[in-house]
Structures are given as C-alpha cells and as structure tokens.
Length: 195
Image 1 (tube, rainbow, N blue to C red):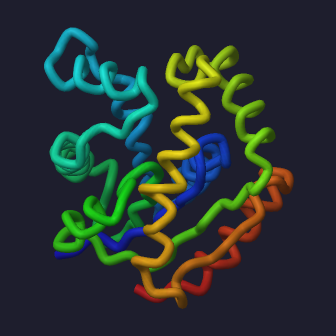
Image 2 (spheres, rainbow, N blue to C red):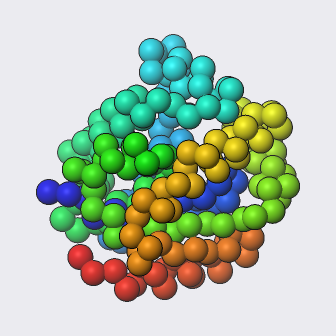
C-alpha cells in the first residue's frame, strides 16, 4: 500500500516546517520533517556524524542515507500508530529533496498535492534563517556563507521537483504572506483532495 502524501516544498526559510507542523496537528495528517529527524540524531553515531559533515557545509545528505532514515522512521510511526496510513495523509517536509529521491520514494508514496512556498526575496530568506539560528539553536542556519550555499543547492537540486510532479497537483503559495494566510491557502488545497 502506498502512503497518501502531501509535499511542502520551498527554499530554506520559506516556512515549510511551520506549515507542516501546523497541518500535522490536524486530525487525518501526520507530519514528517526530514530536517528535524536529522537534527535529532545522536552525533556520535555513524549517521549522525554523516549529517553533521554534510549540513555544516550546506550540502544535502546523500539520498541513500536520507531514504534509509525516512523509511525507518515511518515504519516506527506506523508501528506506534502515530501514523495510520489507511486514515492519515503523510505530510512531507524536506523529503524528497531532489528528483532522484522522488524516484526512490515512488514505490512507497502516492503524491496527492505539492505546495510550493515561494519567496523570491532571497535576502528575506537569509534574514529568516539567521533569526531562526539564534532562536532555535539551528547551527545549520548560523553561517551566512552556508545559508547562501543552501539556497543555491535548493535552486539546483530541489526546485526541479516542481517539474517532476504533474502540474495539476502543484500549488504555488506566496511564503512572504503572514503564516496564517499561507496555512489558509494550503487548507483550501487540501480540502479538495480525494483519497
């Protein structure tokens, strides 16, 4: 059985996590944020060290590591009944990160909607990320050089996902709006989904 999935895609700082968490609090939705899972890893383990090595340079974690971690965590969520695939939509934030990951995940997920949080003002994103670094102890957001590299990586590797999925299920949302307005637009799209 494929998991019914909703993707939230956007550049770092566009509000993917904020919107994913809010949606995941509603009945019938389970939020999975790949970045949160990586940041919660024990940095003394092999996978934790690998995450630190890549994220500190602004690089993406290799697909095999990301997919292996995702598969394991989703399995745990199903076993604990936190995620009920027959009832819940799986809200994915930060995965798939590129077209190769999307291909690797195709046998596990049926993507029903892709919400693209757009923010053309890159300086706004840099400012948001620096603020988040201070507020949330996010070391991957503290260095401006790393932030700019992550934004470039998003443009080159993650943004092509928008062309990978059927245009009829991709919804662009202006992420510069207040978060409540962004959520309203996501909810308007979600209410039209059919299982």
